[in-house]
Length: 465
Image: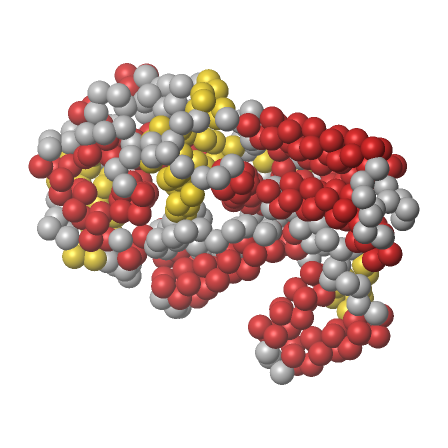
């Protein structure tokens, strides 16, 4: 298996630190709002990487953090007149709902920044004692030039970085490139007591500390969006390696950006979509299929047309599994014919094609193509006259390979129209009674069954996805 390593700019054979085990850290969300579809790409991509590693027999310790203290969280809390904790907990819950809708496996551990402050203070103290950090008026800075390999991930030259600084920098810093490890509190902010000031940690130190605590000083894979390469991941390397005296991560993986109709996603452009927005128009399995239809290192363009194409693509697999299940009901148990053995040999060959695609830096687009070839063979070669064994094995093959990609491809039992109408009425009653959790639960149940609701002036309308 080969992984493209951002650190070396080439594909490398994957060799874990400990045989049979993988330690993997993925930078998680800052929980101040619903996640947008750009956030969804790394969540889906690295869940798929994890699933494939597990399929290959590795025991994966998968850690993804929640940044639950941050300027944006504090601002939202102040705007709403509630605590920062209330905001972060609310959106952790909402994140988990989206995660479930996307069929993303729960992490082995989801550490929260606010619960790891002691470890951050310890690491900062160690960096000061080793000469890699210093304190000025309650703020602690990392001494960037003290880490000779700074820039090795992003391939940025430290002198060029300094020359490119245009903003005014604090007189406290020894060097304009030094970055904050700890900062004093401001009025109305949550804070923790430290040897330097009452305050809170800088953003970069979080992941270094949480990775070390839950995975050890050295990890196999560190992953995230390409926007994190610099400065976040560069600073993580500097802190971790300066503190621990060891290589931090062997393989660095980064997914490319997502654009909307060939434009950068932004609220000012009016093309900003949350995962929750999309869930009101499409089952989230379609969004997952769309995200995996392109290689993770290739820029991906989101559009309604491409989502419709993804819907049709996923439907092809769903229809095939539905048809095979239907054929199973009346199929006879009998010995495989030579022709049937050839069909199974073809399916195994396509399984190998799937594996080869995923072994080549997780090429999910080619992996999906291999599944489509099995679907095509099933549609054209399997009938009600075939043996139960053949039908079951081909069905199992499609389900297994789809599951490795996190795709749920069994058709759900369809609700009858009168059942749908009753559930919609129950939802309306829940909303009138201000039981919004119940109303959301019913909407999600209907969406799982392929029913999309539209709230209009004339009332609620529904359609099958």
